[in-house]
Image 1 (cartoon, rainbow, N blue to C red):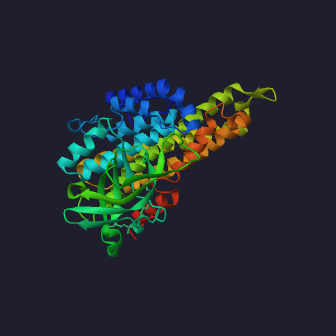
Image 2: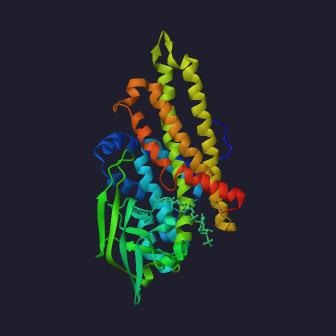
Image 3: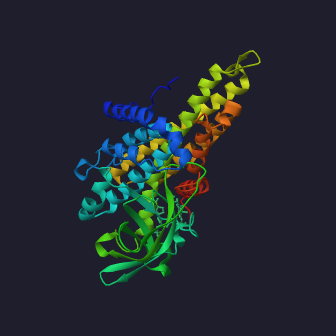
Length: 389
Ligand code: COS
């Protein structure tokens, strides 16, 4: 049952949602289990998504993107994630962590060189902030970039880099002036085919197993001056504002996973019989479905609201930090709640790899962790509300 649309969609929005839905159901859904099991990066379907404009949805056509808005982005991402969260992770990082950072902070030359190929889907972009000893406390990174004439020498180890094993370009954050703490962080555009860039160990993961995640290591990597993104010392603010955009993507991903798990549960509750009736007729199951549906629709409102807030920011410059964090917090916890209930409603078969329900459950967990844990989202929301730090 569709809820009355509080966000009436334009024809353009309906079209991109339908195109993403068709692609996801016809081309991603049939291969998702196999790629998850094998932990293989789905390069072929990602390239096709690039050709369809899904890898740079908000990038203006002048830079090779689809030139659409944030709502179009979340609608497409939600549909992709309904079929497979791994494809969604790759799409989300490419769009909101890589492209949006370049779009907002890159020079014209940098956009031409680093944004265009990624927005066109011909190359893959990544974002690298986290380190083995610096996760939530992002301002304490140890990677160093030391000025050396008209370039920087970068040394350090980054971890949990989504698309790290395959990316062509990576936005990387490193300390240029450690004594200044977060104000000493600088952002760089890294070309992964250059000497001094090493792809490190792969992360074996619980979920989103088809999205490749690894460490990356820098050993005297030379970044020329024109590969610095923004000014020296601007890196932390760039990282944080880009994460605001990223968190809307993860919220949309959570929504897609939750919808898939809910729809599977609803169908199962209508069909499966026990004790002489459909299991959906037991109040214990019906009440669970009611809670799942209600939380999903509340998440949808928060996610679309955050997309509209980001869209407004493009003209007003007003930050959408609060809306993004609320959407990510609620939608990711909803994804976990719904997928947990979905496995329970399905019983034994929900625990089996014969159905995608156990995959939804495994995939949902990361949404409460990456791009800021639920605890970090609560901290950000509380600080925004209190105005205290
Ligand atoms: N947009 C722009 N600027 C921001 C910002 C945002 N969303 N959030 C913070 N800033 C700015 C602040 O205004 C402050 O500026 P000044 O130096 O001018 O005062 C600066 O950044 C430091 O902010 P703050 O004092 O809040 O930093 P903290 O060290 O307390 O850390 C948190 C803030 C914890 C919110 C941040 O480190 C964070 O989000 N951590 C999680 C990181 C994360 O999501 N990692 C996952 C990586 S991707 S898998």
